[in-house]
Image 1 (tube, rainbow, N blue to C red):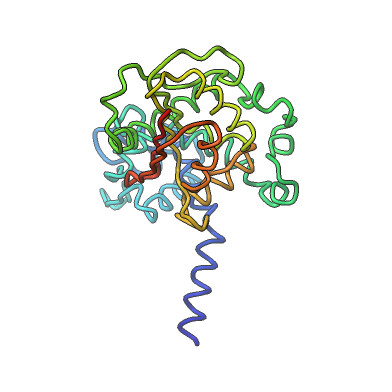
Image 2: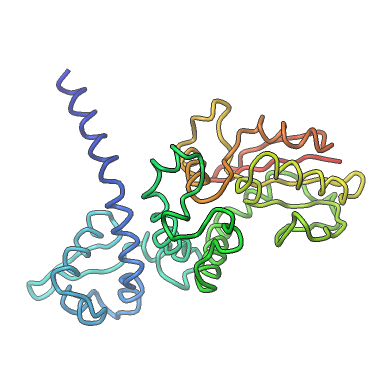
Length: 298
């Protein structure tokens, strides 16, 4: 009983303190800690980091030590003082300019997604996104004013590219796409704008933003525009059949609740959307990362 109780309590504290871990990561990115250490010719002590960042000495030291505990930084000793440098993890994923950097998506998550998640309980009660409470944006203006500035919009788009650089190749390799000569990666106002004729339409991280009704409307439009023998490739994070995993996808589905009007879906739910629109031969494959692929033909 004691060991079980101890494990349960450990998990409880881990879950309860998870937001603190996120904020350490977001704050270090916001302040430019990882770029500073990447550019330095040698590890820096906390006083040097504090001075160059224009941050308080005490706060800087606490943040740096937290980053060491999270394996984002490594610490050594020089002249009797602790000195800090990036770990390989930070150099690879957290430094702007790294080919595998995820910094822009992390910055967007910290500035926007994190604020919306502070209203998760309200989102569950009301069944709608929380932009009004988080930022004063009414739901009816959500998709015209979802970005509080052009800079935030560009940062989100760069963040999507961050993720795509790591996930894109294996998702696109899930199926043989060579039979499709003209491929359209769909974006813009696809509910009303004319759709270009193509052999294959790619909807990457699109359908999860929308209700079933709006997804059905879009898929019907795509079916009409698609050439005979062509198809549609849906790229989304796929839920397990029971909807309770993987954990990352379950959390993404909650994120769709607090930030949009959509949800993540199971393969069966995507089939249920595609079939009434006219698409057939629906095949779903996981690609070994966050995202999976659903291919259907006309």
